[in-house]
Structure formats: C-alpha cells, structure tokens
Image 1 (cartoon, one colour):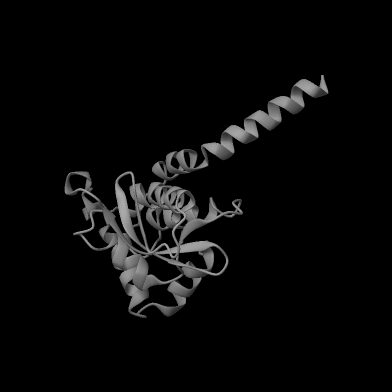
Image 2 (tube, helix red, strand yellow):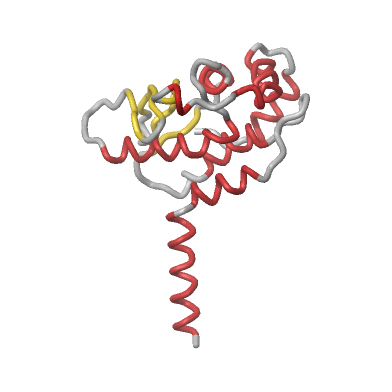
Length: 174
C-alpha cells in the first residue's frame, strides 16, 4: 500500500533529480527562439541552467547577472556556443569539473566539450566568466541566436533599460 507508493515516489524523485539537466535541456528544446524583443528559449535556457542548481548545496557553477558576460560567452561567434543548446549542458560540465577538483583556487574548467574561466564566490558558487568549445569541430552554428544576441547586446549597452530590467528580474541568476 503506502510503502510501495512511498518507495515509488522516492525513487522517481531521485531519478528526476539525477537527470535534471537532461530533462531541462529537453524542455528548452521545445521552446520557441527569440523574435525581436521577445525573449525566447535562449535566455530561458540560461535562467533554467542557474535554476537547476538551486537544489544543490555543494560547489557548482552559475551564470552571473551581467549582460556583458552573457554576451561575451554566447554572442562571440569564435566561441561556437549557442544559448539554446549549450547553456544547460555547459553549466552541468562546469559544475561537474569544480566538484571533482581539489586545487584552490579553481580558475578554469575543462569538461566534455566545454572549457572556460570561472571565478569562485564566497558562497561556494563559481561564476562562469568566459567559455568556449574545446574543439572547433564541436562548435555550433550560432546564426540562429542572432535575435537573442541582439537583445542581450541592447541590454548590455543600456539601450532598453525598462525592458532589460524586466527581463533581468524574470531570470534566475547566481
């Protein structure tokens, strides 16, 4: 009766927690991309990547509340990163790396197809300051995120203060 249901609930919760990044990435893949000034899946992916770590108490990575950093990471065509496809798995890779290391301070990460620069915070989080794909053959076509990058760049440059403040408040950050 209740024991079987309790065991099922606990096991299901454990499986969902373990695969939360994969589930999150599948969720993001169904969202529409940015059009004009309407934020789409790209910025939702950045926010979701941060949100997935709010359940963790250990060391993990996150994206800083800084449009300049977001632009530098995702809107730099030489980095080969697409917010829609890379925000969640890169966060998972960075977090796996910092959790598996013992050196202090950790200033870089390199795991799976990603590498980059991180900055340790006092609360155990590591802000991703810059990132890129480790091998050019793993780079994605970033032209599909041009509208999202235009929006982020507008926010970075302070050209749409009201819209950007609203967008910044709606997102989950470090």
